[in-house]
Length: 188
Image (tube, rainbow, N blue to C red; front, side):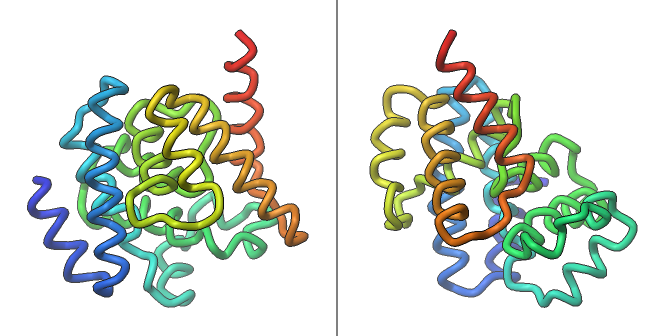
């Protein structure tokens, strides 16, 4: 798949507001990929597709995830806000025939994971710091990313987990493992 085709598909499947966010993430992911030594074209494609299932109904997301191991997770129903990422990964792999690397970047773009690949890290961080992001902490993490990408990832995870905990919500184990991994890297 080309960047242009991913761009067109996102434009067709997303609302104008969600598509604008996706364009911002794609620009940012491409820049981060260059800095991290990842393929910038693959980062752009993954970023254009990261929210491809975001505006689908729960029924469509669950149908897409049917038979997936993630649906068997004891807390699956507690992190509904991540379903689009999980279903998006299945969609880009099965329906679009894209690489596992791109599918993984879509899968982990919201939760993160310990030891993210440069491509995964590019999309995860871009989704948090893209120019359209104005929520509390995004500007701080954006500034940190200019100097230290791993510290920016750890800070984004810390803020995300803190936000979930302050609301009394379940934290996806992948995010906790990612936070521990990147904080540990900071100690080295």
